[in-house]
Length: 210
Image: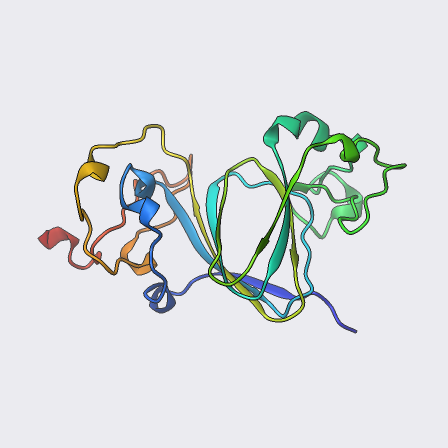
């Protein structure tokens, strides 16, 4: 029996050195709240439930293709309701093997509009990602993702949105040397748990010398 198996794991430090850091992290305080760098991979044929994330993210497709459907958070009150098939796994016995909150009663391949009316009235966006494509996925936006058949690999970078944008360092030409990678960042910022500011830039082993 074929199943849509997939793996999601923190990128090992040695592998992080192979992934360039996207340019927008180079200034503006974007690197002060870096949460995680994750490698997502599967053999294809996967699909996610409708959900949203608490952090901003950049999703870069390395191999394979994915099809996204996305809804604006202005629909939060509707989407996160029982009428729209939303569940809280911690309170719903039918989802005791799951965790978090999501559209667990919705068949994303064929939404039952008689049972869950209203989905067809929401404006939504769709896009396809191929190798080399990167998507900015803002926090709170709802989405579901279908992995096309065949091997699929993507890199996800999560960070918490900064309170202020600092344009000063963005005005400095070549503020960072070329070749900065994910390995040149500290990670694991989390509000209320680990609020020590993170940092990206020249190799962490050399920072104190700069």
